[in-house]
Length: 355
Ligand code: SF4
Image (cartoon, rainbow, N blue to C red; front, side, top):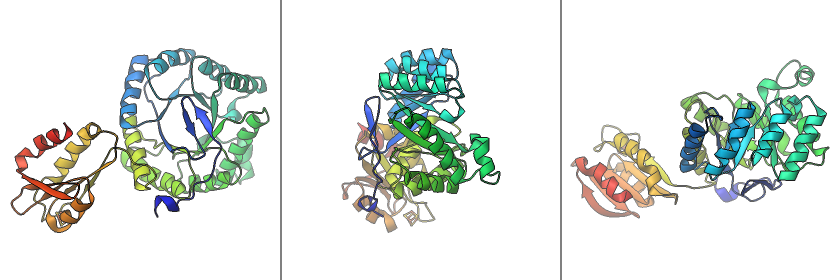
């Protein structure tokens, strides 16, 4: 399926800081910090690292006033929109906006105070801040679970989201983003298919609590990838237990694989076999380490163990290294052979290329 064949569902445009999502705006890659937000140095350092990796919106938890107060300092040091994540306590949501959050993520269904919801909406309107209604399969209202035979179902998750959205829309608030996350990939897909037919809110996609890199990336690629190919989704996050930089890289790989957006270096490499005559894996690892130095413009770099498929891939790549019968690497640029490199010189040759 090509990009032009993906018919993207038209959603309403919502502003988050200096970025817009929904409509024809690009699908943005998000992540979330895992530092203590009150530790401003650690949080700013981590946000800088995810920014470099291509993160376009960052969310931080604000479970207490200390974290809320840290938002102002954090915001002044970063250049992407800052989202505050709040549960239960409406005052923390209001104060997060006062301290500079560009968007807040709440579940109106778990804020047990109409006055509190009204205060959040009033403060959001006054400060031009959007609200993400975030529903999680682990915390659905009890009456909804009961309605669906005591089970957490896609229909129940969608109903919980619609109930929360209605709370905000009844207060004439429309800058809403919706996310419904589940650990179940198929339930997530079905739930978003239901939701996307019920309204035009921009949708944030993710599979929650999906594990460490291996299982998390597989589950997220299937869930997020399937929905993106169906034209559903305006922002994405690959949730991983680990370094958020890996979440951002994985998010970009999903966008690149579905040909939706391109960014930076894409490495194409063969799986290696008995014909392999250059250290393909080592070269790929080194390229990954220095990938950011190749810049943000999309580039394909092919690393192929021999000429069997190597020459064909080299023709289609911007840059390529292909093993030859003398255990050397043939270097190609824009599909044309340029020079032959001795194996011990490959790293320094890559360093020169980066320069
Ligand atoms: S490109 Fe060559 S070395 Fe790599 S897997 Fe194919 S045949 Fe083997």
